[in-house]
Amino acid sequence: MTVASTAAAQLVNQIFDLQRAVRCVAAANLRDDTGVALQGVLRFVGEGETRATQLAERLGVSAPVLSRHLAELAGQGYVVRRPDPVDGRAQLIALSPSGADKLRSIEAQRAATLQGALLDWSEDDVEETAQTLKKLAESLRSSARAKTAGSTNTSNFVEE
Image (cartoon, rainbow, N blue to C red; front, side, top):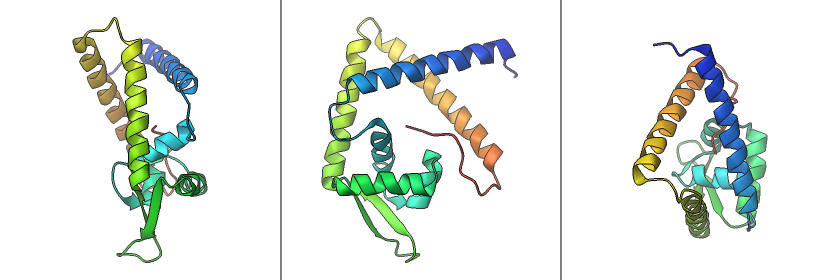
C-alpha cells in the first residue's frame, strides 16, 4: 500500500510540530544536571550493557559525539565502562547504580509532566497514540536500516 504524498507531507508537518512541542516541554521542565541529549543517551544505556560503537549506531551519532556524552555522564557518575571480555580493545558501557536512579527519576518526571498535559485524554486515546507512534518509529527505523545496509556510515536517524 502506498501513502499519498499529501498525506505523507501532512504527517511530516505533524512530526515537526510534535518534536517542537516535546522540546519546549523538556526545556521548561529541565531542572537537573543532564540536558535532553544526555538524557537520551542515558535512556539507551539503560536498556542494557553495550559497546559504545553499537550505542553510537543506535543513536545515529558519530563516535566522537557519543564519546563526549559518555565522558560527561561518567563524570557525573551515571555510567561505567569496562573492557569487553570478547574484544579487549572495545569497552562495554552500562548504567551505574546512581545512573539507574537518575534514569528512573527522569522517566518519572517526564511521565508526570505528560500525564498533566493529557488531562482531557482517555486511556484509550493514550494507548492508541502509543501504538501508532510505536508503529511509526518501527517503520522509520526499518527504512533507515534498509538505506544504510552495507554502508559504514552511521544513520542520521537519531532516537531520544
